Length: 342
Image 1 (cartoon, rainbow, N blue to C red):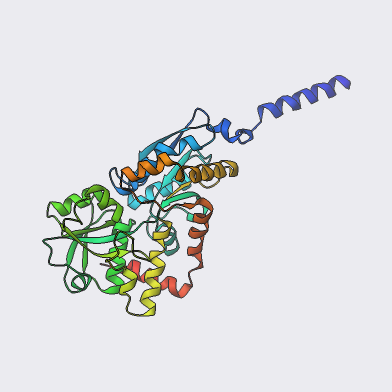
Image 2 (cartoon, rainbow, N blue to C red; image 1 turned 180 degrees about the vertical axis):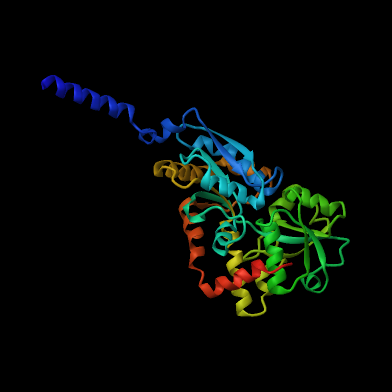
């Protein structure tokens, strides 16, 4: 019996050693010598890509174990491809980070086609900046003001259906009666801007950052006119351009537009998969907090002419969750703004 007991204890001890889960590793042990994939839901050269590669250059040194960050473009369906991949395919271990559409939470709530994710289940790590989009028209377009856009059709280059590049002008059409006609199929905002310059279309809706970084002389030299910005408040660099909410003609329109514009507060934000170990999520969030205060990161952003307005992963998680608090009545109105045909 003594021999049997000893043998049983030995077997149990060996089994415990063999069965020790990877989660028993410290965060530093898990990340040391590894690389983290940063999946970018957009093509190269756009503002999201520029921000993502900035983060890839600086985040790793703030994570315990100092893993390398490898940016990988995975464009498709207005970034829904990356969101779905992160929710359903990517390893749930904190080894993959993603960036996708700031409207994802609202798209999920509205049942937008192509949604294969639950936004609140993603573990949000942090935001580098709010995302102010706008509509600009080339100087040869007869549309010079927002009032003109309500009277005359203007062709805008568009990308994926789930992208803010396409969503915001469509909402403006349906709520405020603008006549933007989206010419879809361009592979990202950089290509869509070139289409404007080539005269294929009259204008484009994209982030202010994308234009400022890609074509810094366009606005100052009056090659383009910016007729509206999609935000809750005016960007400090565009003090004379009204927000879309300012064009609301009544309280109902103001409520609808404000609900949609909440996506600007989610902004350029990063997340990891659902189910990632809590200690690794916390480590990624604290690393993000450290990165946004890092003088080298800030200097790199300034060199690229990027604006910075960070918030923490915890604040971001709460912001994403607040979309579920929309009243059913308001949600139906927002759905109408999203869903009507252009």
